[in-house]
Image (cartoon, rainbow, N blue to C red; front, side):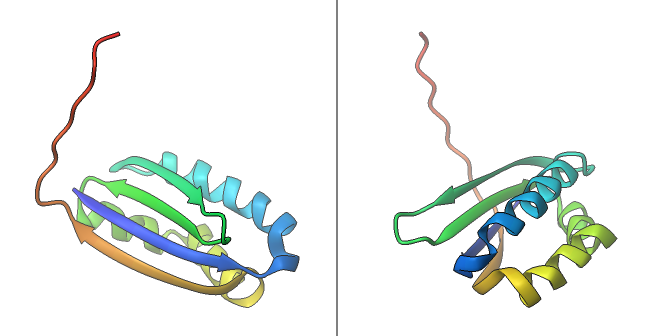
Length: 101
């Protein structure tokens, strides 16, 4: 499994336009073969972190190269982001705990 860590900061004036694009990208990612899950968090200082899990490098790269996602990436660089950083990480181990209700 691969985890993509996408850390970003938005331009203040981009917030409203960004939301529609982000919702569309979330819909697209969810429908990709090999997509496991993704979730976005926003810190008090405005940094956004999206964690996206994919079954394989091939499925992650298919998402990266999807034409509508490529268009959104260009739009993000042009209009939305002050900065971003992407890290693609291979999961070496998973431990899980769930309490029964």
